[in-house]
Image (tube, rainbow over all chains, first blue to last red; front, top):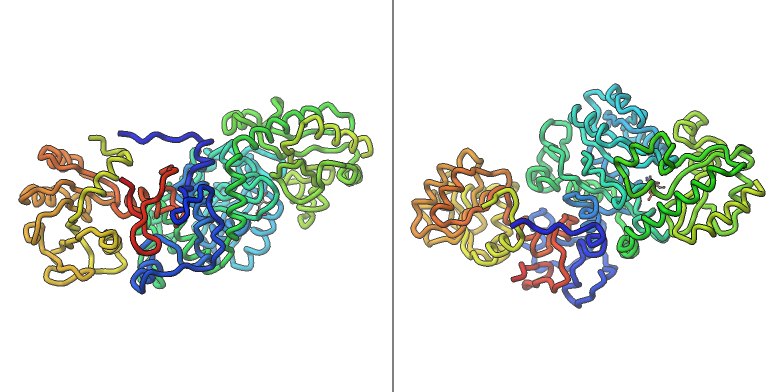
Length: 427
Length: 172
Ligand SMILES: Cc1ncc(COP(=O)(O)O)c(C=O)c1O
């Protein structure tokens, strides 16, 4: 009597998407509407009181967005998800649901530069303190935890260097302290790695990257693993205490193992407001249908390019965990045997100046501040994404002055290499 | 009967066959899950009889509340148990004294008592444990996806529309 479990490729196409009930449209329509007619006042009251499932207002939910959410919950092996306007919005809403002024969270310092800014600067204004730890050393997190600590945050593959995090080891540190582990899985995607299977409780993504995959839409998502007991302590009052504005219901008790995702929606998204545009949800859904094919090609191309650069005389070093002699290769084999993703860094012997000449000399590869496009992308982090950090923070984040970051696309690999070679010749 | 996992067809079959449901432990407090569930089941067309000795004689959701299963005014197809696992043996005694017996006994999320389940099953009653009929209804109909919850159901078939906006039924 057990239920057949569909494969990842099938979920990527079907999860969450029944034919449109009104028209039979097979592709999820773009529900470009702000609001939804109630049947009567009792129906409205049930929706507002969280007593019925359904749509009220697109700041809180939308039918196109809902398909995207269910798709991502299925792909990550979670119980529920909430899609929002960007990856940064996802991080904001997760921490808003867990933290109050005076609380802290411990984060790996190996992070996307924008997240280092968000955590270290903007969150400080809310009275949320970030404490940095070293993703290479799970014990360095334990030492930072005190009774006001609310969560641990890491990236699965850290941007920009692609460092692979030992998620199971960090889940143990978090759970031993009664805390949830939050993993930003943007760089790996659930095709390569599903953090919840390794003990993560919450997964966030910038959908702007590989999930959308075509460089056309901003988006973010929060996936609830359904694993954490929010009522085991008094640390998470948004989940474990009655909510006045919803007639006194307790969200964890009422919604059980998807209570965290509901809390993020009906408290965080409702009040902070970063809703995803229905059009963007639609475009990202289209991207996700081909994620398994694209992601494998991204990985295969990246490995070919990384190998080529390793032997190049202008190149000092290549940091790609897909290369067998990389110190992280064993962790990669354990967590992501299908590949090491598309993003990696290399160092130019000519330093900062060579980095600038290289990015300016490329013809096909695009110089821009993004990753996870079908196109191959390049950036010199020291002069762009990681510019606002100190030299010390840049080094710690793997974004020193001679570092170039590539996000390898799904073009013809020899064409990518040819463009890189001609630009290196000028660097 | 394996109570660790139920297949979708089994649960859908139950929810599409029962019509009358006694909710044991129904709360008059609008913030309690038992109130939510009863309200949802009524909206889906089930006849719901609240059972709660503390509220006997009062009304919940416009329905008279009964002190015990023995007081119900008509036979019911299903008993939905909103009591802690340790109260289940006593509720089981009361169910087995009903005449006629219900076809289904459903124990809510977190409620499980294997010994009682075996006693009920011996008498031909179908038992579901540690599940919520509202969540299962919303999951199998597709409604739960509107709030981003993973239904674990894939389908290329037409959703079953009920009357009014935003109401799905469970496909047969
Ligand atoms: C790993 C990672 N997390 C989060 C973000 C932030 O996402 P967004 O730009 O969608 O806000 C990014 C963006 O570059 C990223 O690379």
